[in-house]
Image (cartoon, rainbow, N blue to C red):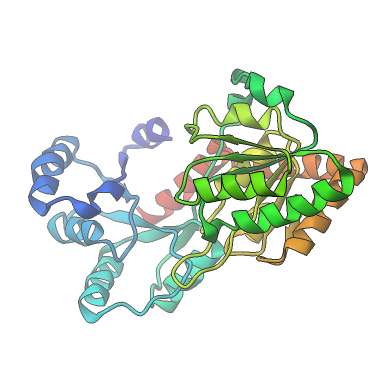
Length: 322
């Protein structure tokens, strides 16, 4: 996309300063001020929230550089006056915004943002599945394999999934629950699964580049996230990866999950392990449904979530702002 924009006489440089939240303002200038001056960008994609101090610093000290900011916040928060003032300044200076979901867009509007907003979905490269190799140990697990990939925390609904899988395992006497990731509940989860005497396997954190290998061996992917006071699922990229990898997906109705899945997977009421069990059972028993969701999932990814599609839409959006 950058080459295409440069050919038309405008250079747009994406800057991801997410990690700047906890480093000193002086370091921000010593490292990035020089880079921005050297690059002399015509436009900046600032991948940070509107209320972030780094977004405010950029908008304040680079007044001649137009930019858009990024938003994944899908819970409305009434910020203290100093934060609201900084956010309002960012709103005034920005040319537009990138919102990762419809909920994030609604929150921006509720905060009073009245400029153009682009739905900036998190993408996937389907060709990575062709390049990845199977993980041998996963090929030895008892089928069907119900997988969860993500943080091992209560808010992600892992205990809801364990309850649902226990119901499945006791009824059908087969299957494996695969958990991939790290988190503060890892030890507790392992001990609980041992006590329930069900088949399970746990893998540690796997990098984004390597996780494609997991999808080659699993039968179903589940994202059972819950909604908390300060967080709910902001997107659910693993769902996109699962659909791209030909894996039927199941998700709770928390946050952006229904928007990501669309009609290409099954949804259940968050926190309801009985309803999740019925979704698992339904997919296990109905091959026609599995095949239909695999087809719909791949089609949905192709139309909405490939890097090429997102880049083209983003290019047109940014071009409309210049």
